[in-house]
Length: 254
Image 1 (cartoon, rainbow, N blue to C red):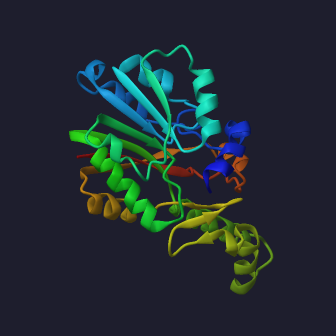
Image 2: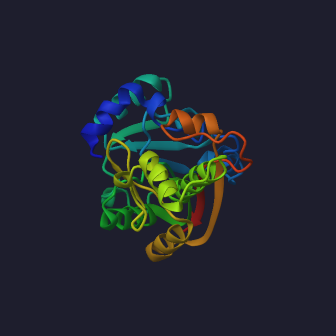
C-alpha cells in the first residue's frame, strides 16, 4: 500500500487498524520504554507514527520526539491531535530513506509500520533504522505475524473435521480456502492481501532480517489480541481457544 492509500485509511484509522497499544491484552512496549535509563535526556523517533497514538507517551518521558510517516494526511491529523506537545516534531518521511537522520536517535519505535510487500525495501528499511540509531541505541518494533494465518487455517480445518458429518480432506481444504482465500496469502514470502498487499513476518525471518541489518541482542515476544478484535479485523474468531492471535514484539540493540 502506498502513501495515498494510507491517506485514505487515515479517516477511519482506528476502525481498520489493530493497535497493540489500544487493542492488545498484554502490550509490554510502554513498560519497556519507561524503564530505559536517563530517557529524559534521550531522543526517540516513532517511525510510521500514523495518527500519533504513541506521541503523548513519548513526549512525557523523552527529551525530543520525532514522529514520521509517509502519509501527509496521517501527519496532518497527528499534528492536530497532538498540538500541545512542545517537544514533538511531526515529519512527512519515507522510512526507507533516512539518510538525513543517520546516528541521530537513542531509541526508535515502529509499530506495525514496516508493511511494504517489496522485500528489497523491507531490508532497506531495517538497515536505515540501524543506521539512524546512535551507537548502543535500542529498537522497539511490532510486526504482524504470518504464523497467525497458519494458526487460523489449522483451527478452521479442525472446526470442519470435528463436525458430526465426516468430510474428505479435499472438502476440508476447499472450505478453509474459501474463507482464507488463496489469493490473500503468499505463505512462501509472508505477504497478505487485505485490500492491498502487506508484509507479515515469520519469527525466524525477523531474526534473519535483523541480523542481516546488523542488530544484536534480538528478543522476540508475542503481543496477544482478544479474539473479538481479531474478528473486527476481518478474521474468524475462535473464542474457546486458549491461545490468542498475536503480533510479534521485537527489541534489538545497535
